[in-house]
Image (cartoon, rainbow, N blue to C red):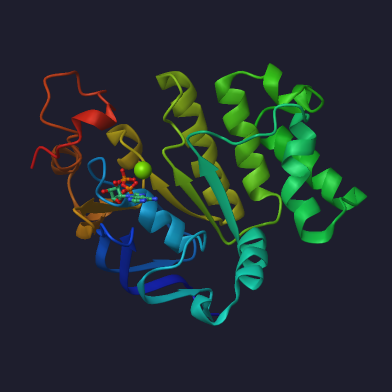
Length: 262
Ligand SMILES: Nc1ncnc2c1ncn2[C@@H]1O[C@H](COP(=O)(O)OP(=O)(O)O)[C@@H](O)[C@H]1O
Ligand SMILES: [Mg+2]
């Protein structure tokens, strides 16, 4: 089996027409199955742009994107949407749950999109996933009535319902306190270990990046550094992951400080 899951070559992304912003300047990136990787870098460096291209939410201006051996440029928009719904799970900072639907219904939404229905097997899987994320007692609660951490856990279960090859997470810790953040990451790591799901996670929290197998660092629309965490000492890793030049404590995750200390 080919272990290459994501293979992006020469990815360029321009926004706007009259006033062009080049958000990606020719990025090459590969991810193999089973990886648990962090994507870090200052605000505006192109992390979310790269994630949406890797997740087939957007198309690159130039370059090629292959996912699990499929060349995305050959797909029309509908084919791309179906492919994405089946193969890729997303977890965002704002979890995009439907507030008037229950936790269980929210988890079943990608399944409804895929097949127009949610058979009993899917329902069972959704219940299992919600149990897995610690929400067995909250299946029928409206999303509106759940805490921020609980809502994020529902969105993780939702991302897993179609058994995706990869989960792309964009600052899933953004709105959570540090304890809830820790729980979310333990959960993602556990899913990676036990279910083999590949992860690429944008984070500002170096405690989290430290727990990854691989760190990919971006700056100004380019990949500045890309290394396995096992290849550097803990001290070195900690320095490399220094979040910014500000004087705030080392738990600082403030996006607006943005500057890498290196
Ligand atoms: N939809 C858009 N239209 C125009 N410019 C955009 C759009 N999305 C992002 N950008 C610009 O592209 C660059 C990269 O943004 P983004 O990928 O959101 O960075 P990050 O996620 O690292 O903060 C920034 O300069 C940003 O202003
Ligand atoms: Mg972003």
